[in-house]
Image (cartoon, rainbow, N blue to C red; front, side):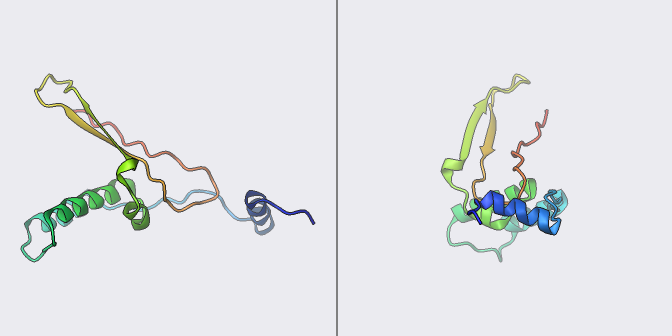
Length: 125
């Protein structure tokens, strides 16, 4: 019997056991819940972190979890090199540029189908 590659072995198991490769929908945090969580983080005196920067980082992780639906492990392994930031001129003619952030999650759970790239929807002013 010839040696199989990882992909060939997966394909054999899929066929042998009639496994599904369909992507499951993941529930994401509702915007109202995320708002209440962030409000508590910023306003509650009981939330004491060792450094102010940790509060900012935690707020970003909460927002990324709510927006993308990624698992905590993928969020924890996010690095500065996975982040691209751009300043775009305000289309409405304002003085302040718009900040655009693009995240590339490298360490997400693998499944048998190809990954969909995360593309945030454009929010128009």
